Length: 427
Ligand SMILES: *Cc1c(COP(=O)(O)O)cnc(C)c1O
Image 1 (cartoon, rainbow, N blue to C red):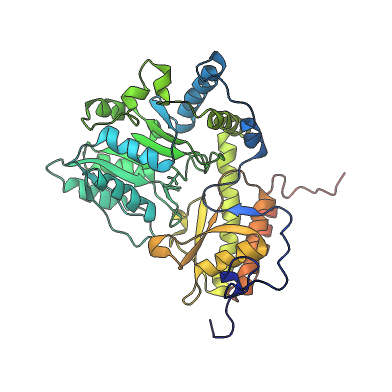
Image 2 (spheres, rainbow, N blue to C red):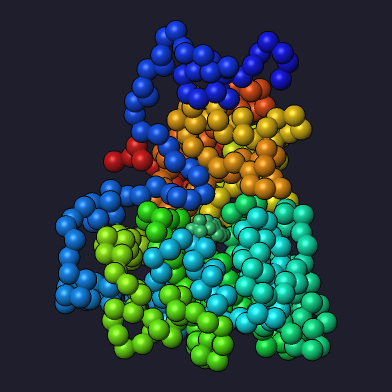
């Protein structure tokens, strides 16, 4: 940026660059601010209201019935006949649970790189004394199943105990093909377990665990489940449950054995996160009422509207999709690269402070290089159009998008709306 044109948006809202007290304070903003970070996501009023109630006796029959129904229904959401464990934790807690229940210090895992989250999960395993093998990536491509087969074939000593795959990598916007990774493990004839980080995919795309041969899926409450942050989940198939019974790593809070035992109190290992469970009950009800297939179709359609907009911005404004291949772009978020000299953080700050739209910034290696548009959870057409409009206004403010991506998104949504093509004026 040339001298003398310091960007006022890099200061706190309302303050000119340099932080001096403003002469005229900025008025408070009115109306709804739009949340399009890739987690947390929008929390529907119904879920918020479900939490707005007094605490209850967590060992009473009503709460036990409610939480039992959640445990049962979660098996359906994950598509497993195994067990789902609910942790009072972030998604990171789910990662740790998957590590300490299945792996021992000195074991090796294959953790193909997809971006910041795959690296952080691997780093957590390394902190537990696990050796990490990886398949490097430029953060613009999905996991290569052939490379998984090659790495497992090379493991003639059978040191690799598990493959750690991130389904939707929220740092890069890439979705990896989980059935293809399962097939790659099987093609190598290797016994490694398949552990999947489904934190940004559950509730946005199908993940039928048992049918896909996934041994453990990890999730968290604040993304596709539309809830506040605070619950982690591990869904564990039969093979992984058996492996965990043999695993000698010391554990207690995270222990699947302890949580799966007869004592109800141990299911949550302490006081049940009651209000989060009220929220979870409402979230599952909402997903059931919509019908999961409809939920997935809604995400696919809204994601395509975003991609239509980004395509126009790329053609006329030197922006670009971070994910190179169209088939590897996730339905949960879209990651957009900014041209050389344009900091993705500037787009983000202007979108938030001037146009009321919060989006994600670049993480670690992509810091400043991208911005991330979250589109998972409780979203509809006007929300996505509002977000795209705010982002487009920010892009125009800094002069990097010229033709209207928003118009392309509107056109796509009109063409694909239910009843599109019917003559709505007739009759
Ligand atoms: C959000 C996210 C995480 C981290 O979840 P926390 O609840 O913040 O611990 C991990 N992996 C992926 C793919 C995510 O999207």
